[in-house]
Image 1 (cartoon, rainbow, N blue to C red):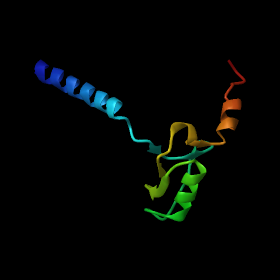
Image 2 (image 1 turned 30 degrees about the vertical axis):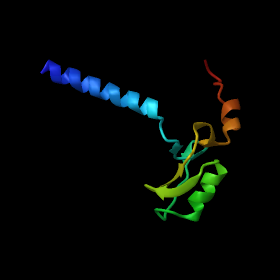
Image 3 (image 1 turned 90 degrees about the horizontal axis):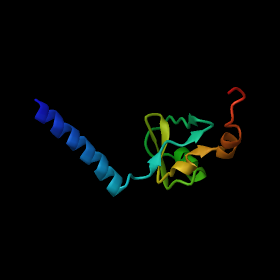
Length: 93
């Protein structure tokens, strides 16, 4: 039984290394003040493509009721990111 657990742990660690070596494909759900862009027409639509262009992504479509952008980098994920960085400090410590 212990040998199976050991092999399972090694397998999972190998999967993480493969993802790290091959590189994760950039993409994700763009945010507007930490809220997703909602869409109603699933699949390819002009609204999500415009949203992705706004966030400097390559291609956009509606998936699970939210716009998804391929080629979206982490630094372009949030709109009004400068606002978020300046207001990051808490009033209470």
